Image 1 (tube, rainbow, N blue to C red):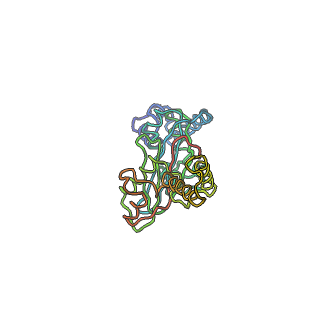
Image 2 (tube, rainbow, N blue to C red; image 1 turned 60 degrees about the vertical axis):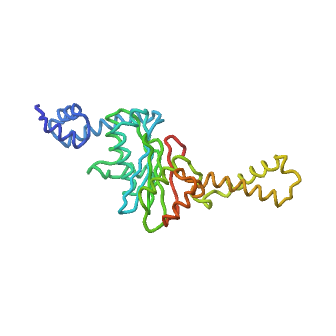
Image 3 (cartoon, one colour; image 1 turned 90 degrees about the vertical axis):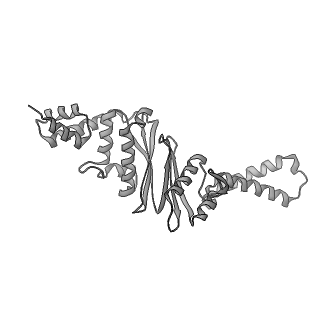
Length: 281
């Protein structure tokens, strides 16, 4: 049966698969376009099934923000190799998935995979991932995601290895300012956005560490209890300045804290999400 180049191109546009695979599917389907689509989907599923248990040590972070709807999402998608993580196909896939999470509000990864894919009618998210699986023959999976609403900003490192989604409170926020704050978070990896976000048990642990350090210091011997308490509080304050975002010196201008920077713009820090490929959630 003669298959026209136009039919092959049409099938390729619908599925994203290679021209030769599209032609073979059309020949098998005797020119039936819908049947050829199903053949390719079956092939993609079989490809996914073959690699599903292979380790996914590489991957990419992607962020999508809708500035009009004030909604956004950050996702981590894993794959097997660094070259695939940097490929255009994988970069586009991660961008698509971040948009999917932001706009369709899945509750968990399992829900996400079952959703109708926003970028192509008649295709599920699972099938969208399978489409890329079929092209590169690597195991791929969504490792985690977070969705936020409000005044949002983001930064993703050039290689996709680290990304941040940040939320602030206020009337309006300049995108560049929020990008700078997100970049700061990427570099400094604070433990929490605000002091009150630090778990009580963590604060207790840091107090105990500070106390043991002071007690072990020969200079502390003979000092009054209230002085010792002040030294311990000073050490704890230093820990907060090192680990709490709004108390950290801003990386681009250490004469001010991140909190000062936001306050000068009429903003307050609400929360942030920082993902690094391979980290345990």
